[in-house]
Length: 134
Image 1: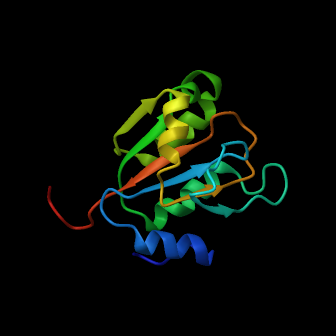
Image 2: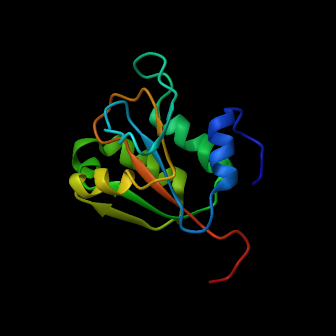
């Protein structure tokens, strides 16, 4: 862990304990979170904090090998998709049906709930293996 950007203790702890191929979801305010998945709720009021600013901070400390998005973000929230592309750079992204996305997000180590109200502003980040050539 690089420990330079996250001051939220639960998020910092989750990132520090991620192993190769573990998943962490950053979600909008409306994504259903199963009771079996750890919820880290950041929502203060509508839009605070936003999805993209939360994702940006998580990416400062997390090495991401791959990401999953709901295919709906491409057409229903293209500005969020553009922001994701910019933040992820060369990280491979796979799109899923929204039903499959919700199912897979429930297997994440945790879901970070933002106060984003933009539809389909959700991402599943897959932890990579720092410093190992695969």
